[in-house]
Length: 210
Image (cartoon, rainbow, N blue to C red; front, top):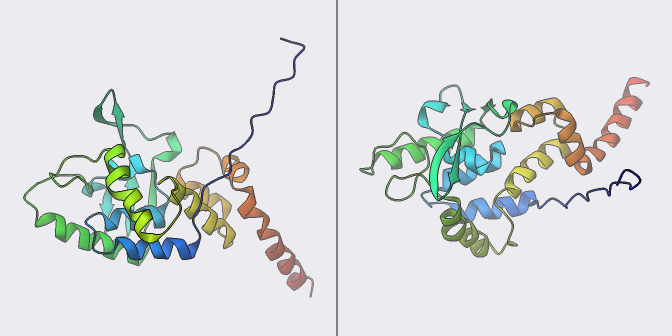
């Protein structure tokens, strides 16, 4: 086998939603008890397990920040809290005003339900959410209602990163925001979004050189 060249692993095309599609999706979820989860996913790029494991003590609404420090995983049919995917996945994330408003409203609605819990997002009985149930009962019905293609929830993370980079967001800041283990990973996976930044660089050169 030493004489054989290793085949290159082809990179799968990322599933993303456009800004217009995301707006339609958000409008579809208005009034749903998990609307804030969708808003949080769209505006932070957090992984689904990170959102499921989020506790109210991780959120500072006045400071408009949250801290990702655990993930909810399913092992052998049992739900348990685990460490974030990588060391850099443990991170603090700044929140837009719209996200803070959505979380405040969600907290007010949750307090009206007689199921005391530390978790930000739960099922209707106050228990942790399961990926399979969420996907079947919430995520895909949202997509169908919005008339959008059947994509994975993780596509919201890809969409978040792509939008920030395409809009000229600082590469290091974006990488840290979403908890990538290395900035080079952000470059490798989202090169398509970064390519569009070259035109901005040329414009800056023209301006600098008069």
